[in-house]
Image 1 (tube, rainbow, N blue to C red):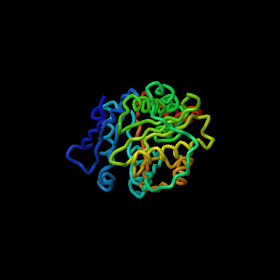
Image 2: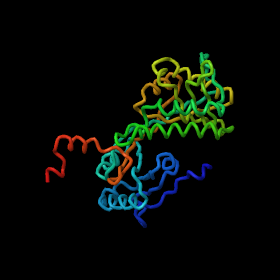
Image 3: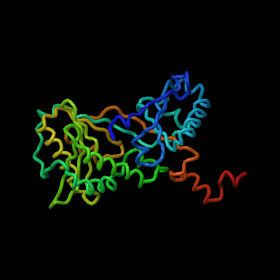
Image 4: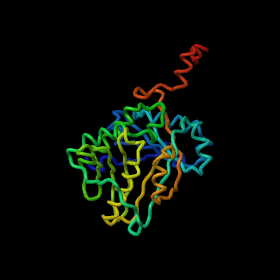
Length: 290
């Protein structure tokens, strides 16, 4: 599989109405989850608001036609108009994200790290992937009460496994190990002296220690030796532990975005709505009320 196999093609949600936004399928997530996942790119807020019913119907038809169970979208945090409108269109807020940037890495005076990283070998893939599958708590799929946690973990499990198997000079997984046992990793992509911290993590039992800081520090020192000048990344605002580590290391934050999910009424793989479960258990469901 190549990157082109996972390219997202967007089409107008309402043909001939580009202001209503566009939709596309996410091949990477579909391959891992076993069901189609969609993405909605917002159009003109005023236009969508004036034709909200048409937009809702069009999204429902598109989702049914492609068997989409969940559709994701995000908007800048400053777009309070979209944030107010999206729930009325059937989207539910799940997360806030932040972009992070560290510039001037080559002139940064980083402290010595107590841990050593090495490029992952194929033999490291099972252990690193297992950590990826259990170590995370944040991100849009983990924050969605309707989304099964096991599937969210499978996404990161497959991510790291694929990254190790397909590693090259532009995409590498560094592992942190103790007596031959992998206990952390950092997947990094590098392009024109700019590195993206795609997915770093340490194992669950080490997350209350200083090893999280040491992993980030060791990763930066490794990138510094490789000639990287700038480091970027994206995190959930809920992940304050990582935000604090990155702030201590000199990262700056920007580009906050609100993330929303739309769930298909016909979804077979998602968890039931918590509200539906509560109403059913109390005997106050819509059906019983009627």
